[in-house]
Length: 162
Image 1: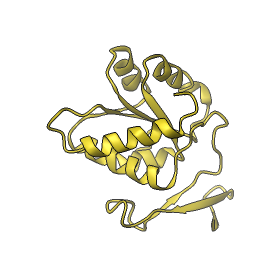
Image 2: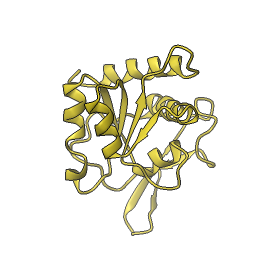
Image 3: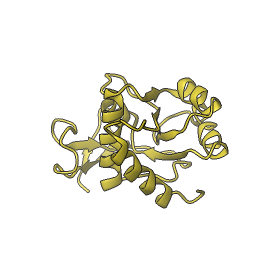
Image 4: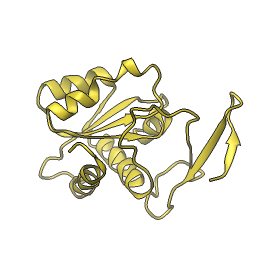
């Protein structure tokens, strides 16, 4: 992968998305990869599953079926709401969200790590980075039901513990 220098002088690699898979991606179709990724970020999704996940997040945001942030996601998990959880792999310190994967495993909710917080923030059309997002399970008349099923199937295939 080609690398560039970030604002802090560290090396940052770029991941190029497939333009046909995600028409609403960032303006230049490139995502900056963070210089540091958490050692507990497993499974880290990428490529086609990542672009489908970002598409799913955008559709869920339009239907207001998205929970954003650690407190809101944990509250939804405690209330036994089903969905898919996306965690950022570059969150520091780890203690901020180290309990979320455990909660997901207890409630049998699929989760996966995404390379950066800014990527999650842009996917949910926010100006601020997001460390945790939860896409709620779709209702019967939902427009993102098919995408949700594809992403859930992919997440369960790459997940070593589910």
